[in-house]
Image (cartoon, rainbow, N blue to C red):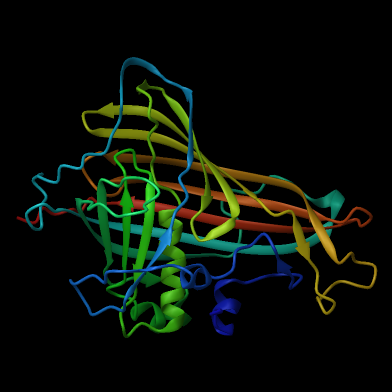
Length: 355
């Protein structure tokens, strides 16, 4: 199993307070991908390694309110004959994606714990990714969990990162690609990743991690007809983090032809309820229990996106959320608090049409 280098773990995942092993925090993305099947390597851009794929579970979609006015089924177009074309049968969208990720951990008496986190908690680092997204009609694949109609290849330009100590590693990932296969409702069936052959191990691990943050929030529409003010929830496991369950609630605030405006809220919770304490953990003593259980989990979120049904990615907006998980022992007054923060911001104001 590949592990993050010590320098990366220290600077990118700054854990203040106790150093403990959290069963509810997923291991590195490389572990997830190591068990996946190989996929075709992309042919455009810098030379990349053989791509690996990640199977995605089909989410549960529940309509909470169908909305009002004219109701219709909202579907992504599989017809790529639009004015923004790179090649025949391909729609190209260029955009800038900013991804923020943070994690902090602390220990305090139970009486001092606030179960609700601030929106921007944790030791947050941000990566800015110029992306080129090419949309084509998906070819049929045997044994796929759902029949995909759209295939999108995202190619990373020259990324930048707020942690300057990792600049060399991040620079080495220019040309990294992520592929997605979805149906016309936006449900993903598979993800693929291909790193440039010259990318460092640290760089590719960071890039996988940040792109998975993007992939963990697809806009999935319900099967039902919906209209203005419609609300629905999408329940899934976070891609690359099988121990984390997520509910995203979407509300339609505007429909302008094929452009849909959405308010978005996110709630996350651990699927595993235990936290192991190592004997040599700093800050604990012989009275500290060896295992702590989940006592509380809350998410604070805020977000809005605009989606063009003809394009691969959201055209504008941002979504951010922080999840706080509180652990404790049955006879211990100390609490372990973990805050995980994620933010996504989309901007395709510089989008160009490729004839």
